[in-house]
Length: 197
Image (cartoon, rainbow, N blue to C red; front, side, top):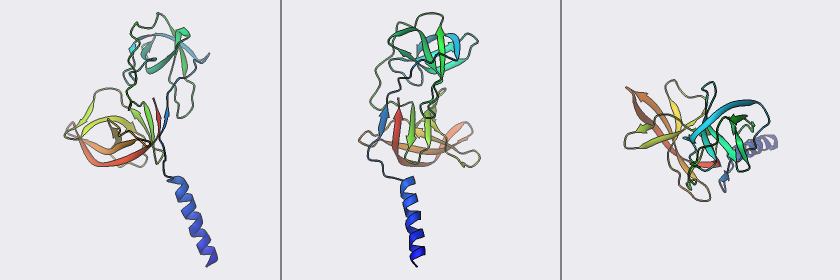
């Protein structure tokens, strides 16, 4: 009996670690250092499309590879850093600029702006670039999520807009595409653990 009770306690303890309550969403402003290598050459033609705020850029290499967002530093005028992954802590690459950054420096970040978010279950969601995915009478899918084990034809994402507070809230959606129309299968309110912006 004691052994059985001990096992139940261990299972409960492990489960509580995996689904610990979030007291506050951690918000991280991404300001990466520019690495010394690898190095490519290119230009930044406008503010970032996926992260439209000061210091974030949409850039292209000399061989037409698109990178968005890339990040500049106030004291560096001839290079930016691209392909940063703050989740995996990868440093990215140095893009040596063939011409100065555009005069437009972007806009101030909105209060609920995010580039990458981590949900309470550790699922990672990232801003979706490209044409908008609109679910009629529901909202726009702004983030794609890396949820594992999805059925064929089912996708995971986050709707645009967060409810702000000590713990940010978002709306997680499972959706499919039927005759080129985006259809929501389920929508669930979720807590946001970490925001990178």
